Length: 499
Image (cartoon, rainbow, N blue to C red):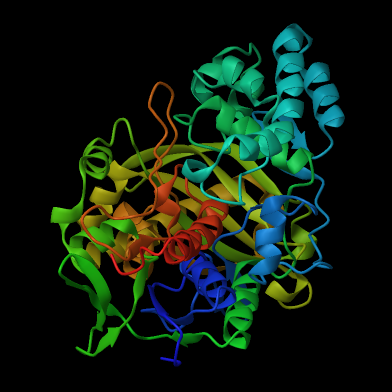
């Protein structure tokens, strides 16, 4: 520890952990990050198979618009640069139902025109949807300080970007996507609005997501997830931070109700003035500090999967000859039903990475298929023997491949399997609770989950994790890292550091 400097130890080197590490260094602390895996990044990850690169995470990145508070955070942590390049994409997703094809374009007027042409009888709902997407497109995620610390002036400053959100919430905040879809008469539109996010999500969440694409605040950074993480690692290390990979942490050391460091799996103790937990919060409560510190709010959310459901996926990646696949973006389509994870599947999505020419050899493109899975499917996978698990994965890949060929017959003889991963993969690699790669789903009539990022009963321990606010994801993770250091610095300035 440098003389005169206080030390922060961070458990977990995902986006939240790296963000906390960078902000910790900028605030003048000695910082060390301990990551169990060979590389940092957590769920924001990519890996190589058969000469191709598979991107696990970024479908779009919220906060890419210059001048926004969140863009400033992404630039501060090095994930984005002032001149970062983004993918030249003109759509959010395409939905195919029977012979009908409909797309949510980045150009909202184009979307509105296409939907009206498809289904004139749905004009009222289509125009209402487009109008409220325009409202939602102005929405910006608060990134200056935690919401619980905001004063009147903070809300006034934030007001312009949030001025129209009450209109969105009044119309779409109390219904879920399934109910929103039910407002439309055309079956292709009903499918479209339950495709991208689970149908249990509040409809307003979907409008905000699509609105970020429309506004230019939800672009895809060139190079993908791993490249973004590597930029953050470089930033952290250039600031003097220490990253320890392949170093699992067995517990957070607590003495006299105060976090004083960590103990690694090889029983080495590392002392610190502050500890930030950036791992999955159930991992923190169950293994690092003990469930006796899990307060009633956490307990009730983890115990009630009806009100606070989680989702994951079975995913499969393929490399195809570019000449045999002329689609772009993410496409959802009906397929003959099959079972995976014990769940009947009759609709899947495929995403093309044709825009990342470095992800595959010349003349090739990586495709990835996503099959949604929830808590029940996680338990199905968890209950399998090792041999059964392998067989079930192979069966899922075979079923997916058959359905890709049915939908896109030109791929026959031009497609090769790369990899398949399940909810158990996320659990094994990231200690993800029930294999979830995001936080709790935001459901209608259920108070959205949000906590401060502190642990009651333990001083000097802070949480920087996507789990501190629903629905999680990269924006929550990166701001959680910033906010954890903000709380530490405020405590230091207030003179309460030794409490």
